[in-house]
Length: 67
Image (cartoon, rainbow, N blue to C red; front, side, top):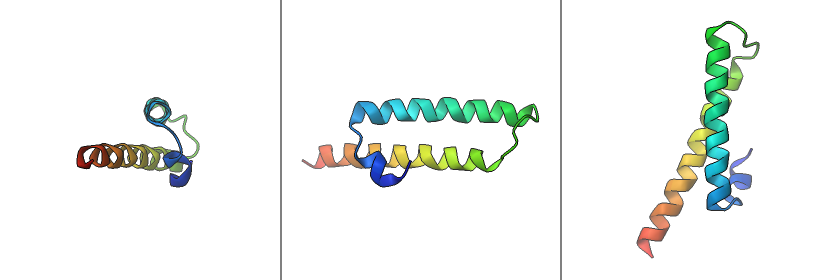
Protein backbone atom coordinates (compact mmCIF):
# COMPACT_ATOMS: atom_id res chain seq x y z
CA UNK A 1 0.00 0.00 0.00
CA UNK A 2 1.39 3.39 -0.93
CA UNK A 3 1.73 6.28 1.48
CA UNK A 4 -1.07 8.25 -0.19
CA UNK A 5 -3.44 5.32 0.20
CA UNK A 6 -2.48 4.98 3.85
CA UNK A 7 -3.07 8.68 4.51
CA UNK A 8 -6.63 8.36 3.18
CA UNK A 9 -7.49 5.80 5.88
CA UNK A 10 -9.10 6.97 9.10
CA UNK A 11 -7.52 6.23 12.49
CA UNK A 12 -9.34 2.97 13.17
CA UNK A 13 -8.58 1.61 9.70
CA UNK A 14 -4.96 2.64 10.14
CA UNK A 15 -4.71 0.78 13.46
CA UNK A 16 -6.28 -2.29 11.86
CA UNK A 17 -3.79 -2.13 9.00
CA UNK A 18 -0.97 -1.86 11.54
CA UNK A 19 -2.18 -4.94 13.40
CA UNK A 20 -2.47 -6.91 10.17
CA UNK A 21 1.00 -5.83 9.08
CA UNK A 22 2.53 -6.82 12.41
CA UNK A 23 0.86 -10.25 12.20
CA UNK A 24 2.10 -10.64 8.62
CA UNK A 25 5.62 -9.70 9.73
CA UNK A 26 5.52 -12.33 12.48
CA UNK A 27 4.33 -14.98 10.02
CA UNK A 28 7.12 -14.09 7.60
CA UNK A 29 9.69 -14.24 10.40
CA UNK A 30 8.51 -17.72 11.39
CA UNK A 31 8.62 -18.87 7.77
CA UNK A 32 12.11 -17.43 7.45
CA UNK A 33 13.27 -19.24 10.57
CA UNK A 34 11.93 -22.56 9.32
CA UNK A 35 13.37 -22.03 5.82
CA UNK A 36 9.92 -21.92 4.20
CA UNK A 37 10.13 -18.34 2.96
CA UNK A 38 10.77 -18.13 -0.77
CA UNK A 39 10.93 -14.34 -1.19
CA UNK A 40 12.97 -12.66 1.55
CA UNK A 41 12.24 -9.19 0.18
CA UNK A 42 8.74 -9.50 1.66
CA UNK A 43 10.23 -9.01 5.12
CA UNK A 44 11.67 -5.61 4.30
CA UNK A 45 8.52 -4.54 2.46
CA UNK A 46 6.34 -5.33 5.47
CA UNK A 47 8.77 -3.60 7.83
CA UNK A 48 8.66 -0.48 5.66
CA UNK A 49 4.85 -0.58 5.58
CA UNK A 50 4.78 -0.78 9.39
CA UNK A 51 7.14 2.20 9.58
CA UNK A 52 4.96 4.21 7.18
CA UNK A 53 1.84 3.49 9.22
CA UNK A 54 3.54 4.45 12.48
CA UNK A 55 4.84 7.66 10.89
CA UNK A 56 1.35 8.65 9.76
CA UNK A 57 -0.06 7.89 13.20
CA UNK A 58 2.64 10.04 14.83
CA UNK A 59 2.01 12.89 12.37
CA UNK A 60 -1.69 12.86 13.21
CA UNK A 61 -0.96 12.78 16.93
CA UNK A 62 1.34 15.80 16.65
CA UNK A 63 -1.22 17.72 14.61
CA UNK A 64 -3.81 17.11 17.32
CA UNK A 65 -1.41 18.35 19.99
CA UNK A 66 -0.64 21.53 18.08
CA UNK A 67 -4.28 22.43 17.55
